[in-house]
Amino acid sequence: MPYVFGSGVPYGKYLQAQALVDDLKVAQARELNRVSVVLQSGTREIVASQEALCDQSVHLQEAVTQGFDQLSWEIREVRSSIEDLGATFVWGFNAILCHTGRMADTLEALLAAVKTPTKTRAYEYFDDARTAFTRGHHRDALDLIEKAISGDHTSSGYRLEWRFHLLKGSILVGTVSHPELLDLRCAEQTYRTAADYASTDDPRGAALALLGESWACYCQGQLPESLDLCERALHFHPSFGEALFQSAKILMAMSRPDNAVSRLAAALEEDPNYVLKAAGDGDFQAHRGQFEVWMHAHRQRKESELLSVYGELAKDGRFWIRCVEQRVDLQHLERTLTRKQPPLYDLLCALRTLRSVESPKARRPCGPPDAAVALRAIPTQLPIPAELLSSLLADRYQWKADGPFFELSRVLLERRELQALRGMLEDYPGCHDAPLELFASRVEAFPADRSASAVASALESRGAETRMHLIDEYDQLRESGSYSERTVEAIRSALVARYERWRPAIEESLRQSAFAGTEEPGKGVIGRLAGSFFGFLIPACIVEAIAGTAVALVLWLAGIAAVVGTGVVKRSDIRDERLRKARDEEARLRARLDPQAPARS
Image (cartoon, rainbow, N blue to C red; front, top):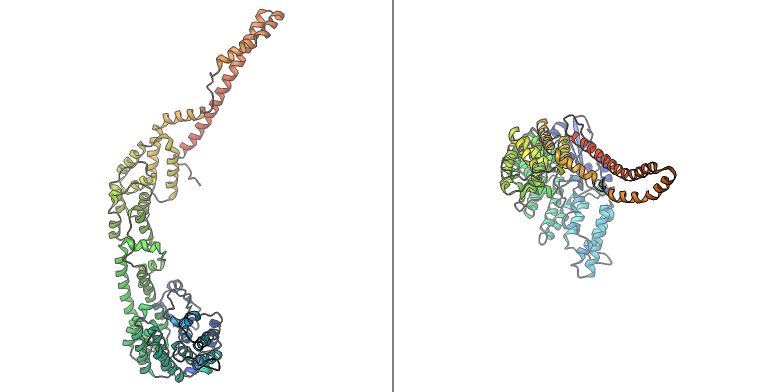
């Protein structure tokens, strides 16, 4: 649990809590800053849904005790940047304070402006102190940072660098691994020195230091002074989320919840995770009734704001094109918009998503390809705004009936936007080489009489040679499941009718295909007659001398007939076999148009 001054537990005792010591050791070992809060289960359900927590890498752990839930996440996993701390947990406050903004500048960057060897040595001590602090060696870090500030036998030190004092204050403000180093009064003064030095050249550094001083004052019970320091931090950095939250926490501790929630609302604009932190903070829980009343009211305001912002953006095709180009995950936005009374955290995350995509400079959709992309980007559970459809279809009269045009019609059909589909196809230019599914979309959108005639008209321009491709397209649209039985039957009937009219052309095409590469059966008959006439002449004379003229004549004529007839019959058989196979293949193709034909796998 975050430290609460009003709990009566001194800050030093709080730092020695064994559970926090163990938790910090794990975090330090992995060089991570873990956020961990405990919420009452009823409060958690008001604050955030489990799905939204998962989207933001916040883990809902097992209940720590009956009626309580523990949430945890690691700063590096949270989508919000830690540039300005983010929604940090108080025990990790000082660790993160030392690794954000210009405190994280590399040694090379720090030395770039240094002109003397003694200052160079001071910055080297500082860099070593940062490393020791990160690794949990806080005693060594304190010794090194003292040398950076005050010097040693090798260096005179450098007192005017605000980073040195900020790191020293972050050690003295206390850590659970080294509670013996706690010195809140000294930390307060050290942070004040850091703020004074940073105020002239680094306003954000001054804000960090003032925030650290504010925390030191809070832990000592100096609430008015702590609040004033938060105000000064916000003067240097007005959108500093951590300062906004800390001022809200202090106001709650001062029993000024009305003022506190306005500050919390400002912090939530910077990072939705602050609502989780607030819900698990003891100062807020001390005014739980008023806090939950405010959360309910704020939830209603944010729900209205979300609907308004979404309604304005959703009707602009540029928004959806930008979502696709930036690969924005819209699942949580869809879930929030379709959920009844979504929790506050869900609403805040959804609003942040919308605002991250919003841009007046985004590219406008142009033509069917962009229109299809924009419509596909809209989550399926959300309706397509009428204004968006009108704007996307405004130039349809100049569109050509190509593949992208068909893609757009398919999207409209999938979303059951039949009225828009009718509007797009009503003045269809009649390009008959468009995909068959485009005409299927027309059948789906219009009454059967008009659509069937459109399909028949389209097929008039198709030749018999296109039949295989058309039947493949028919199989695809039948198997897609996107079209009603009426549409599939209308397309099938049109193809069957056209197929019957193609029969003569098909038969001629089959004959030409079967006979291609084979000689005519009668080709070469005269040559074979002449060859066999003279070829069998001498054998016939010999037979005549032996067996007589009649026998010789019969054998001679039989030889000529065998030579000539065999070639003719063989070529005729080859042609007949090829034609039979082609007709069988054509029959199988035609069978795919039968009503009971099985779907192709």
